[in-house]
Image (cartoon, rainbow, N blue to C red; front, side, top):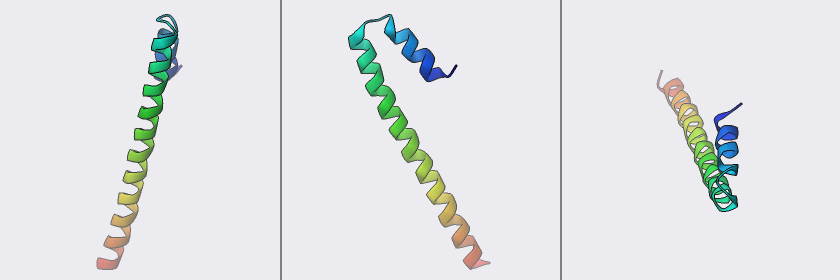
Amino acid sequence: MSAFSIFTNLSTGMGTNILTENAVLLQIFSLAMYLIDKLAFTTEFLTTNFTEKVV
């Protein structure tokens, strides 16, 4: 069971408003993780291309 599932299951006992707010927070967190991952991938790609041209 992932941390997101545990977080959602704990939120269900707190009411629908809390569950909705936590769902929105999880979506924002997922988007931030996606953007950071793409930034890391792009940095790795550009660094590899730069070092291959220099050497």
